[in-house]
Every structure is written in structure tokens, then in C-alpha cells.
Length: 108
Image (cartoon, rainbow, N blue to C red; front, side, top):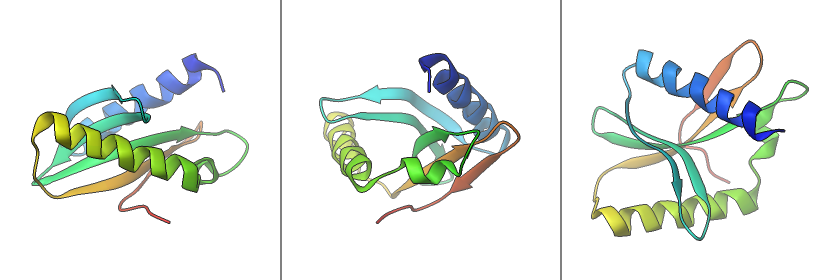
């Protein structure tokens, strides 16, 4: 997948989240461990979104145990830098050409 397609998928998800009551906190948060595509808040819960796009198969298969480990380490780093101590969840935003599906509290 090209960088352009990935950024377009993230743009679609950001708009979708905003329309559905989320406040976007940060996009593309980087650490030496990895990246969080979108950090958003709805109510009192901070959500860390991994955006995955595919036009040929279910994008959930692109979130591997190795990727989850990187996400968790990056979230820990985010909390260390920002002194946050709040409820959070790891979410997937699965994007296809026709739809966006959100999965809350993903884990392996």
C-alpha cells in the first residue's frame, strides 16, 4: 500500500470520528517503538486508533501480534510524555473503498 493511500484512509477515519463525537487529539504520534495513527477522545475515554486499509481482504488481518506490541509500547511512551492517567482503549479503524468499521478494545 502506498503512503498516499494510507494517508487518505487516515483522513477518512479522522472525518468519520469527528462526525461521530470524537475529539481528535493527535495524528501520527511517533516514538522509537512505532506510531499511533490517530489519538481521539470521546467522553472520558482516550482511544488509540490503528488505521488499516485494504480493498482485497478484511484489513483486520494486517494487525499482527508484533504490531500490537509496538502499539502498546508507543502508548506507554505517549503517557510518559504527556502525564496522562486516564481510561483508554486500543481501537482498529478498518477501511475499505466502501466503508469504515471501528473495533473497540482490540487485543490478542
